[in-house]
Length: 110
Length: 216
Image 1 (spheres, rainbow over the protein chains, first blue to last red):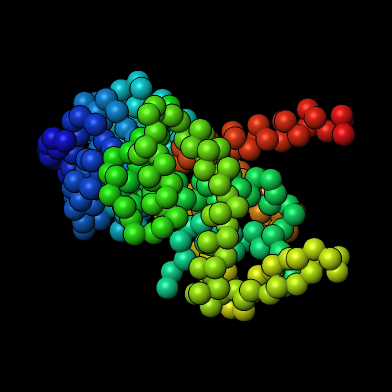
Image 2: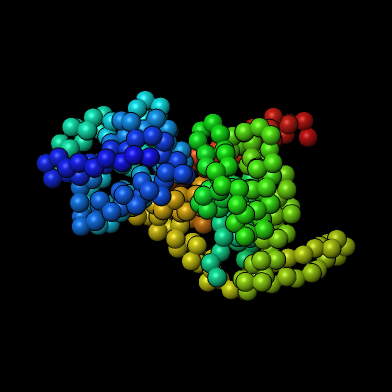
């Protein structure tokens, strides 16, 4: 899985690319948790993620938990329709901040 | 030694004093045990799921005989099926799973084995509790998630779904408490695909019971 990092207006953005599943979950989790260090504000851009499994969803949940515990912020941005559907079926949209675009996410948590 | 999820759910399904399984947990308790075995395999990175499939990502044994037995069965399957299929398939072996889990809880010093007679005739084995520390810890973890508005750990979400499946919440909470946290139970449990499949499978059991009950 490719993970590209950028910073927009003090918000760190991790753009994931590929599948988020058991094989890629450890790397994604390490990256997101690392970015959240020091009460940071982090957006996980899913616009180029076409598949999220249960293991992948757990990574997003752990990142959100870490952000809450550490006084930071975490949001998901731009999920593709199939991924958004999985997030909604699981009720993740009720627990995590989720935005349709990266810009909206930056405005939302920035 | 920490308990595995199948051990935790079996312990919660047990009437502490009599050492018999709670009647309330039957028949969905078998599905909850199967679900717990699958949940451990998922958390150990051996299988993964999505709403349509349960698939093997790493066939390496975990070292836990029960989990490895289930993993071998899933690895050997010729077709990929969904979580619900595997919950129902593994639940068919729940007698064997239960037997092993009871023995483990005896070895860990949580339960003791008592051989006796039921109705003075039928041989019966019971497992009364000798240490309540483990069960208190499990209950405290569950209550901590339900009564605090925090993001749950995956392991706790899975366990809460297993308790919901086995119908245990009315035994763990007062009616008033249950009313207060029912929505939270569903919210936390439904985060996990496995819990949603488990709930679907159990709804089907009760639908079948309701369908055939008038005929009995």
